[in-house]
Length: 637
Ligand code: ADP
Image (cartoon, rainbow, N blue to C red):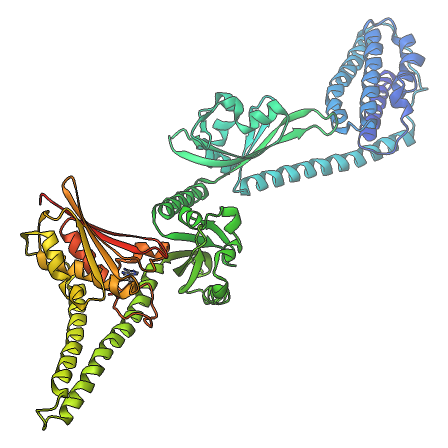
């Protein structure tokens, strides 16, 4: 190798040394930075300014070489500055750009060398720039170290890139990574599957140009610019748990829950893109919708049914009361929920209600109990409560459904029936006992037909028998009428005549006077026996329940096509709140049966008879001021 070649080869080596130094700085290897930062201090610089410009200045490219060399150092300084300010990636990326300029330098060195060789002039070479042995070693060491680091870095990068890819493809969630314009750069397999396009088809696509028709939960279209990734870009705010329906290219609809997170450059804080993740919520949504639908149906049903319904959680906290419950109690839902409903329970029933409520809940099987709830008007009414558990597949109670049925009337009827049986037995027992006594006495005197007692006892026995007969007749009538077996045998008759005849026995007894006034000639078309039965009942009641009122007034009054007959006494009267029940079966104002005998059937029978005649029956009464029982009959029937 001649000196000229050696000169240029040394220059190239020195350039290589510069490059190694720069790369070392950028890869954090400790080296002297001065030769990199100053183009005068660098070995190549020293060679150019101390020797080459003088020796080869006649070659024009020599000046180009000087310019490119200075440019290399300007570029190197910039990269070192970037690296030092923490922008290491940007600095490393700039390295390749700088290498391109450095290649120019090598090219220029070769050109100059070639021109000198072709030139007749003998170049003056220098031996000053002999590259020193330790610099060579330095160079070799640096390069080896660098190679190691670069290989390691490349392997690291590959590994994390691979890991990233693996994680992406393993995710069930669909992932799309968008650039700052919203264009999809990367997508994983799940995204392709969910959105119905291949990964390649999805790349370079934005929501704006996509083939996906998106709809919101209310069915309205979501414009492409408002898809979560695009919205995140526009607003610079992450979009969290957005539900959207996507019509896939094949026409099928899928519901996605979408998140769109911002990708921010950590070095300069700029928004560089969006990561969007989404998963299929079609079946969950369907289940939720189905649940909502069945809840809606339950509510409709609960609102339509006349029964009172409530629901409670497994702990027994009530959370729903249907409108019937609210109407009955006159309270608002807020006042009844949790344990608020307790305040509507009759104080005597609270303990048993809570015990049974707890027992049913802990048994988990449902059950029934009776208690009294207070109505809005203050009245307590008996209810039959039924509780039914709704269980999940694991047989765990999810919800309790409770119903309360008003059984107050039924209960009252039951009580009345019990009362009635005891009264009826008592009523029958009295005449039967006296009949028995009469018969026993008759038995004693049977051998003495001339005894004075004989006719008296026979009359007594007959009276007792009449009473039994009347009672049995009432009972039979009541049950027959109740079954609708009341047949009328109608005829025309003058009503005042009927009154006169039927009350004769009372008049004859002389204790009570009966005064009949009004339209004495009115003729009716009715069942005379039955109407007589009604009148006798009114009159005997007046005698029975108003014994001190010696005068009974009967008034016959015609208005239009109706005749009204009223029977009034001046007795104690009847409490106002009892009036509406008087014509009910078994109803007696004095229910303990001590003061007055009776089955509570008389007025019920009267009302059935009058109803059968298409007439009306009623009572007006004032406590202490007597009572007036009346009935009316249509005249043109
Ligand atoms: P009963 O057959 O037991 O007499 P009713 O059906 O005839 O029963 O009468 C029902 C109730 O109406 C009686 O228990 C009585 O208390 C009341 N009542 C009926 N008439 C009169 C009246 N004139 N004055 C006061 N109370 C009466």
